[in-house]
Length: 221
Image 1: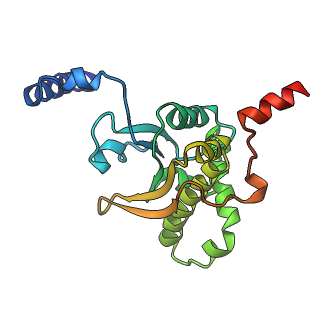
Image 2: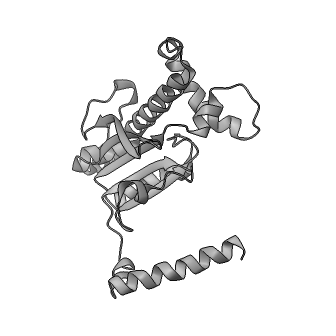
Image 3: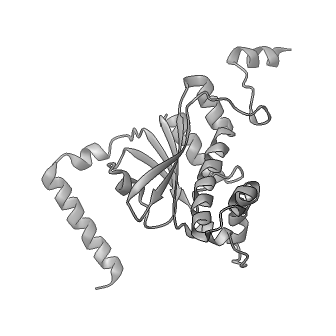
């Protein structure tokens, strides 16, 4: 049997099992979603957000890309972020990387990989920023693991620098930002970064938002 046929059969078995456990499962699932979490993870097939957190469908809004990056010129991630924060009003945004990440590993090398070079450049920038610390780590695998952690931390910092997050912090004092790393060898998640809403923002990255009254007055004069 072809692989895709197996997937379709597995879907039918899954749907049947859910209905046997709860006849209203899909009726409830089809209602509006109200997740508390936005998950920004790696596209790696071994790191499914719901599976490793034991969450159910509807509990986490998911965006995945190679090496879990938050790039300020990527309209995809920015659109997901805005929708999750401003429409779904999630309470938490998680950037979750994982050890043994192929994207991070590739960024540590010098091989020409074609188009993805431009994406991996963002990780190389993280490496360059933390060059002194990373070069003190002699063991290559330990250095690799540390870059995975540093990359997650930098992506969380990138979230702080967006107008979406800063405006949400000003208006409703949410969401809380988290940086996590999943370890495939243990199945456990390590917390490497935690930024509560309203935390201090470096002045150069801070935006000043006008109130509705200020905008109205400025349009008159």
